[in-house]
Image 1 (cartoon, rainbow, N blue to C red):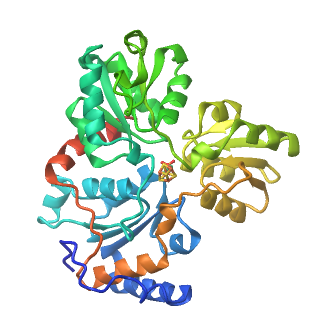
Image 2 (image 1 turned 90 degrees about the vertical axis):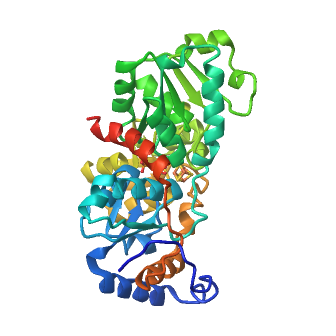
Image 3 (image 1 turned 135 degrees about the vertical axis):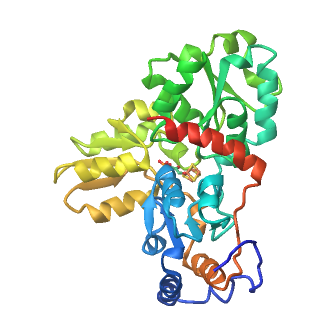
Length: 380
Ligand code: 13P
Ligand code: SF4
């Protein structure tokens, strides 16, 4: 199988695929998996819907999935059931120069089954905005004193920016270790795109709020902060957020505690500081899963992260009481775009050696993004 370019030779997936029952789609997906064997790897993020997860070779958080993508020697194509930045990261890691050389020059084709599966948080920081912010910051503080840190939930161009400027990538599972790395080298951090992960992590390090400020990319006057605020800040937080986790509120924690005596509140660090402060535990999706798996029967949880993951935990752990923290539905609508129809459509194109929705980061961006990703992978 050779799969090198996006070539939508087949008709659009719809209505041909939309009209099919889930059972028929599942059968066709499994037929492609049998046909391609280990040459095809399907990756599924924890937030993905169950019907899609059922076909994944690996389920994990953004970081684990990227590592899985890079590690399979016999893989020729990856279908990434996640969002755009994850597929970009998989392309960069799976197609590192040494990996491509070891395969005799063959690249792994990375496919995102629906190109509309983006991340609203990643979209809150564009490379030209980050470059403008860097220039503006340079008029107030010495940028040689700042480490740019990007959350993995960002475009490859932002990771490349970090690579070029002595910076690094982090995930929700290693953000603390990455900030330790950054502060061991320079005095300040510019953290993008998620202000909440940045603030929550900096607070665990004892950095007071008076030494943090928020950079609003839409405010031409120094991102909305004064010169003095910027000069006294050790952490400059990009004004971005996850629209899913922003829906969890401190009053939801209060209501759960009032209604379920003894409940433990477990949230993702993309939630606002006011929610994390009221919670018992905060951590990445993998951390959340591990906490529930390790808990004794009868443990009562209120969990603040994406709905599909919480529902799956509830199904897999009937011996515990698991509640969704918010009274309203908080789901990642873009992740949800990856459905059986899109997965089947993209896999059948891979099998026909006419891949569609190929994610290919240009070489120059990939080189510098890899620099920042490798710094992260080296952080223990
Ligand atoms: P993790 O899976 O890395 O915890 O991140 C959650 C998330 O929002 C993915 O986009
Ligand atoms: Fe992006 Fe939030 Fe969806 Fe994660 S849950 S992919 S951060 S919008």
